[in-house]
Amino acid sequence: MTNGGPGAPTEPLAVRATTWFALAFAVGTGGVLVLAGTGLVSQWSIAGQAVTREQFLRLAGPVLGFAGACAAAIAYGFRTRRAWSRHLVPALFGGVALLASSAFRTGELPREMAWQALTRPLVMLGVTVWYFYFKRNVADYFRSLR
Image 1 (cartoon, helix red, strand yellow):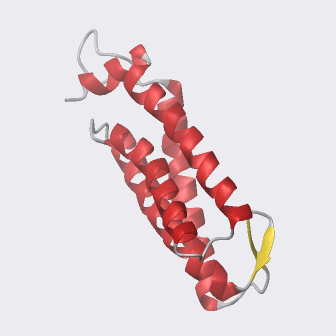
Image 2: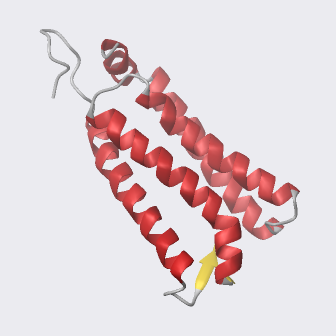
Image 3: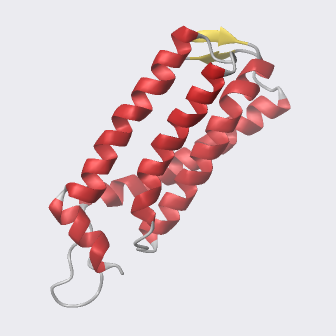
């Protein structure tokens, strides 16, 4: 898929795949929040540790809501070829790390869970910054969308 004009960069395969993954993730997080909110599922866990439904909603609810909304915006932006959409991917991972850090500082998130909740999004933040801003063909593709 190209942006339209002759010589326009081709949409990178990983961007196309991320579009579909982000859409599925947005739908999935919405479904999980509905299930948790209605109480239809009785067993919940965070980072492999069993938690109550209330704990799950208090700890994971804001993260899932934020991540799901970002994922929906990413899917829309990538699908409609919006230049601003690339900024949302690192923002998603940075936001998740900030939410986890905040929950740890307030004592809501135990140290064992905080390690995973901070490390994984920070690693992904680094990977996505490199991919969307420094990988030549991807950066050229998004610059061509302006």
